[in-house]
Image 1 (cartoon, rainbow, N blue to C red):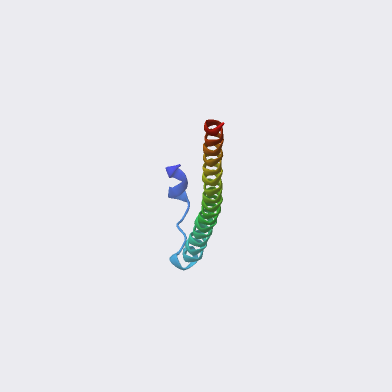
Image 2: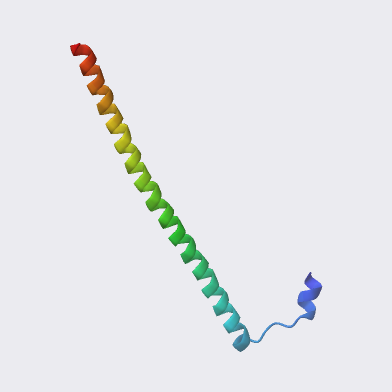
Length: 73
C-alpha cells in the first residue's frame, strides 16, 4: 500500500481543496440526515410513551372501579 502512495503524486492544494470541501459537505449532509431521522424516532417514541402511560392509568382506574363495585356488592 505504501508503494502506491510513493508512486501516486499528491494533488496540488488548489485542486485538492474542491475535493476536501466536497467531502465535508457530504459528511455534513449525512450527519444532518442522521440527526433528522433520530429526532423523528424520538418524537414517535415520546408519543407512544404518553399513549402507553394514558392506557396504564385508564386500566388502573378501571380496576379500582371494579374493586369498589365488588366491595359494595
